[in-house]
Image (cartoon, rainbow, N blue to C red; front, side, top):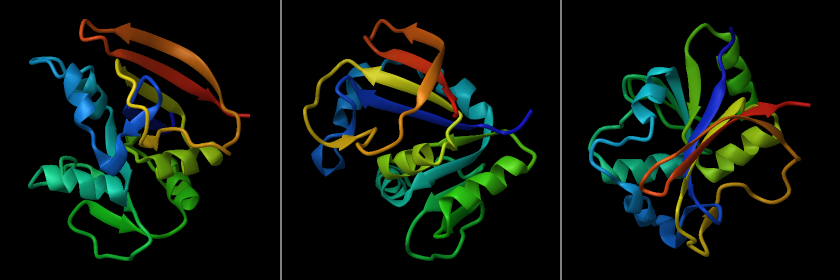
Length: 177
């Protein structure tokens, strides 16, 4: 079985992963003690993380240590920087990186955002599955998860889960052309 690239992300009902100024406070409306919406099981299934520079910088403002330091991680950036242990700052061709990672032995690859990375991967048919948690709020403005001008992408529903917080999680397989 080959490795899959899996997008695991939360969005508002109107399709935004952040409000203006990278504000993610709307995510807190579904926080519930003891509920991680399947994240701990999901994260055990991956050994590699891909994320954009802006997402990485936002995360590092929230925590003192990168949360995926136990996994091979790639921050996609336009500026070359030296690696830090398992954390690699990658400024090369994203398609080539994903194709190389998929050809290697290992667990799945977690795409942790942001929108620019997600849309670049979609344009090149490089996302295999999407696990999207929809937060019950309309934020009205901000960073859209799916940008305009990308190719059509057919999806096959694997599962849906609904939670008492109002969050709905949809798991899709991408059907590549």
